[in-house]
Length: 66
Image 1: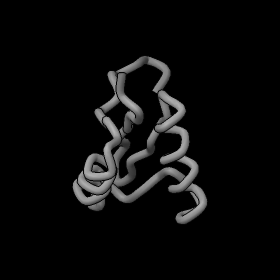
Image 2: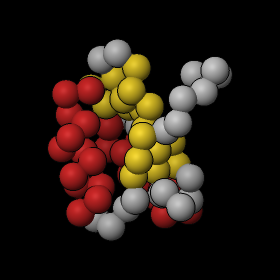
Image 3: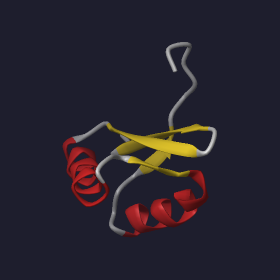
């Protein structure tokens, strides 16, 4: 199971926690940045850092709700 998923909407990317470990990463992002949303041009770097830290991250499947 993936710890985090991300949703790309235009210029921004938001993260969603799927596991307890993912929730820890999510909370760290919120503490450091004020939210778990980043600019899309930072996505590659953030994914690299999360995966290097041992988190499993993938793009969220499309939904009619999003």
